[in-house]
Length: 63
Image (cartoon, rainbow, N blue to C red; front, side):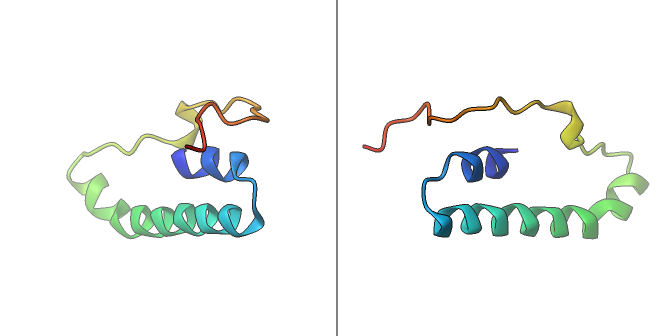
C-alpha cells in the first residue's frame, strides 16, 4: 500500500511509473511465494485490509 499511496502523491509521471513498477514487483514476489506461505500457514494480509485516503497534497515535506 505504500507504493500505491506514493504513486498517488507523486507529482511527476516518472515517479508515478517508478512506484507502480515497485508495486508490480512486490505483487510478483508475493504471487511466487503464495504456495509456500499457504503450506506453512503464514498469512498474507490482503490489500482490502487497508484504506487509502483521497489525498491531493502530500503530508510530507519535499525537504
